[in-house]
Image (tube, rainbow, N blue to C red; front, top):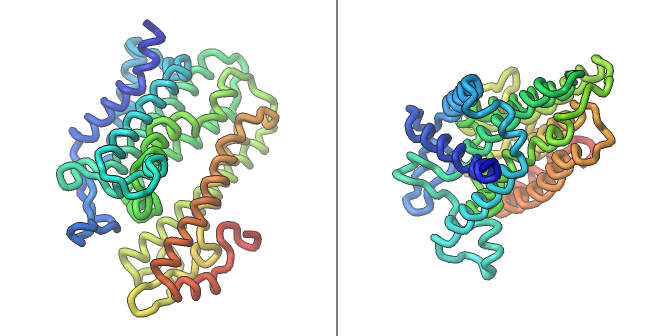
Length: 358
């Protein structure tokens, strides 16, 4: 029975999260992407922060009355991962097979997806919004369960492990606080919904991103000096400032072109039809937000203090590979879209991700 319940746990969680997303009142917002058929800018229904809050409250109440132990998601994590992989694969197949082919290879279609912006009832449920919401909430619940296991079962509590939990909690919370901002990011603009995005959000995101916690939750305090742990926290904060600052500056520029972002007066180049931001965060490198994401991942890997456990480094290694590949794809898309203006931009902003290095 435990095996079966562990396998279906992510399915139950995803159903509950979906019902909350549908039932909780949401704000309808206009995004950046246009509908290819109508030419109108797509609208999205966003309530992620409230869904997350209610989900955490339900997790707490179920543990408090001992219906679902707080440590359940940790103790059944491998079974949950298997179940999530099955769900992710099934969803990817369904969402791809329902749309006519647009590539020569089925496997390319399966990986990258066929449909760019699948929605139900004029955006009442948007596939990308739903996928990222489910992934973020499930990741948060996993992190809470891992923290509960550590506190209940380890005699010498590791502050660095709890810091790693706090970092991932902030990662989930702030994503859903700034949910609207992400409608202007690469994922919503360029990605299609297939295995890469569907499996990624339903299985990879909620289970892999916490990989550093998987292998350190049962370990005691390694004795890392407090000031070093504080430095890891500061490193994470620096990465967050780069990522969130860059995304917020771009959002501000797209929605209110002449308005300052914080103290930064926007400077742009134009070809008469398009404008590209060339100062502030976006003057430092073309994808400074990717650098911020990588720095945050490194900080999360460092936080528990078990540097010799190679598995804790899988998350930042994955991010490096992901963003190097995405930068190449994104630059190719921008080159095709902006032409000579993109050449002018790259002449001004020479570095791709890391200022002064790459």
